Length: 182
Image (cartoon, rainbow, N blue to C red; front, side, top):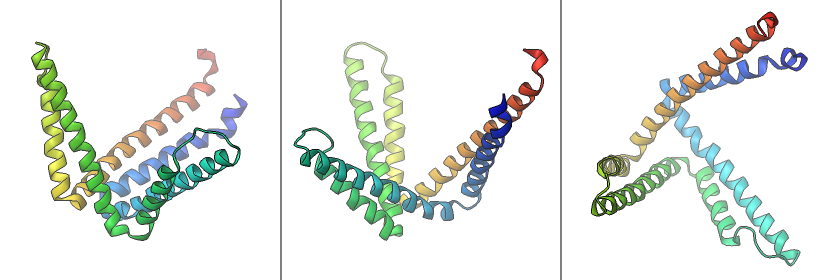
């Protein structure tokens, strides 16, 4: 219980930060969206450096395994593109997500056809694939607008999660003070 007393501000603070980020994404999606390529670019760049370094260390030790060197170099290149050209990066992210949705839609449609041929229920898979296909087409035609919409959806999720974390922290703080209930 002593640890909780010293650290009880941590979950409430994290919840407040999630709420602030969520509200910012809901109110100013374009501003938050412009930060997204920087954050993702830094993460992908660090991932690329780590993969290249790990692979080179394994090679120097005469061991096999680890990520392919080309994978690390590709991550480095993508990270640099995201950091150096933010406007292209937002379109790039939108197109990559759209292509991912398109592939997912095709795979869901294929599974629906297989299930239909086997006499199994297939309608929900076909509907899921159709919705993903429509969303992918919208994202390909309007990548910046779709990324703005996704930013707002993510903001709403952050806001809900932040409120949940704060309420949980308040509940646990009350529970630790009311030890007679245990």
